[in-house]
Image (cartoon, rainbow, N blue to C red; front, side):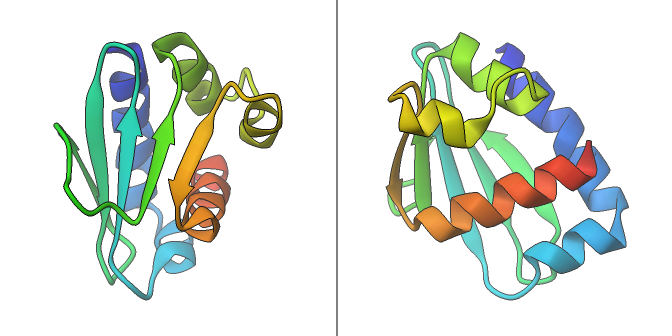
Length: 110
């Protein structure tokens, strides 16, 4: 669960920053993360705040799929998410723009 723990820390920082929350503000989004060993969901509220929870959602806005190691490398900044997507290490389905917005906000939260 390293990627869950990494994202948990980023969500804490995101929720503590009004600048980062304003970047996500607007509409509710459900971001599903699927790894070879875990499933978890990031709920982004209309006010830009976020909540992370284990499990899966039936109708996510966007789904990110990768191995646990790749997902953790993306979340820690060791691997560029766009590069991972281009090389096939990260798969996206759903609203790709929502994923790009999230990546940008998480970069600021680091």
